[in-house]
Length: 302
Image: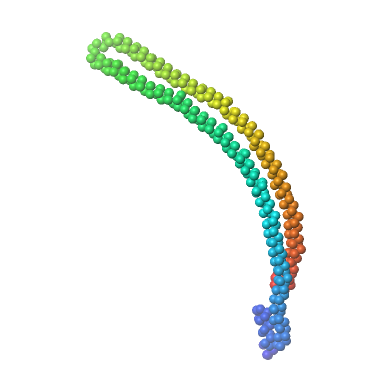
């Protein structure tokens, strides 16, 4: 009865707790559990040894790589950069500014902007003097003439006609002929006014067309005497200054910067790239694989 009651299946839990439970009733279980308590310090010592063997060389290699990179930067890249900045970029920027940018600014300001400003002012003055002022004067003249004609027609025709119609109504039959004559005079006067207005209109049209043709001739003369020579001068300046300077800068770039860049790239490929590749293949990859195998064998990594 007691054997059946004590022979139960082990309770679920951690392996350490099951071994301790068995050790209370079975002396053989105590002998089997003693190596487990001794294995923990051994695993820690092995892990520390592996870390010391693997991590310390990698750390030293990393420090060596950083020191080599600092030396390369301090003794190769920075002197090359200072040399290029002092003896290539600074003279090139000075030459571009003094020989290209400032002459172009002066040419654009003196030969283009100022003539265009003068042309705009002359055109505005011509439009004001030849078109606007005559039109304003003509409008004022027409207003004065219209007012005078209206007053003259009112005081010379309309009021006398009203007075005559009020006073001479009995003798209207006799004045019919006079009214006809007066209508003829009015028609003659209207024809004269129309002739004067038409003449003034033609005068205004002739003045506007003359101003337009004069402005066109001035612009054509300005184009022939100023803009076309300026354009030809700019084209000649571009061909004989900017284009040779650009070709010279491109030649200087190809002679100085391109060989230095090729030399730096060749030096990098010959020194840094093989060293980095060798360090990765011969040191880092074997160290990583060895550490992975050691941790997998010790059960610290799945």
